[in-house]
Image (cartoon, rainbow, N blue to C red; front, side):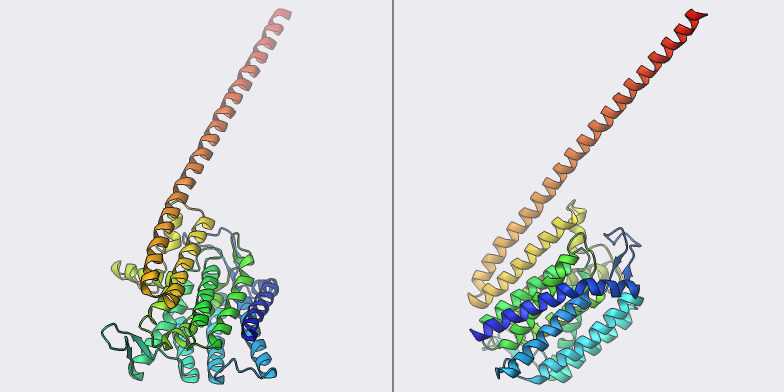
Length: 399
């Protein structure tokens, strides 16, 4: 019971710090001129909005984790198995947040960003010893295959860098990345509770991350007062990638690889589709476009809020499938995935039709108002003409 209370405290501290520090971070961003000015069709917002809001999330997360560590030392409860884990994570965070802040202020080139993302990933691997040690193999008697360090290290770097960029790619609508990150964090939290081998460390990290992102969300949801920027998107992706490697990939279960893929499913699938789409069109992988899931939903006629809510539901459905997969097995998870997919598709179609009907009604009302205004104008013109004619006749009679 003490450990559950510790998780609740971690969540609460992160939420409070993130919520209270966001207005301060906004003022700092404005002073540093870290502002997103819409310049092309990919931008949904129409007016300049402060970036770098992710610093509030970072503050909430770091203070919560350090508070929990200090509390565990004072109470002599060993929630943290190894100091290497937390040191490696914090070093990686310093690097990834640093490059995010610079990108929000100066807009760095993709190559520079990628270089420092790789450095952050390597730092975590070398300091914390975090790596993907095994992957699912249905043809193996154990259901998994152990990876040699020569294969394990490159795959781990690729996974961390990929997830880091995936969360940056979905940060295209107000509240989308923050909400999806919260859902992914909570999904991994419950999975960690159900997986004894993972331990309390992953639970504390995920609880703190969920609290920090939810504390920031009220300022970021549509209409957004501040954006998390590269600072927040890189940080969220990096920490979630770390958690998935540190916890889920260490399991000997044959389903271990499916759990983080489902938990981080929305940004992961969107990134994979983006890479394939750009390769097919002969464009650079790092090039920006307007083909992401949130863009497609808006092109269908959905509003920004409707698109975000649908993607929240999709992310929650994938997270729930990961939890069910952990607790009940593959069959239950597959059935749930099919049912929720059908529900989401039907919901999106209904919202599109409803939005279309509302637009038609508004257009009809607008046309009627225009017609009424034209008729009123004609009546006024006719009345004016009649008055003018009467005045002319009166003048003629007087003469």
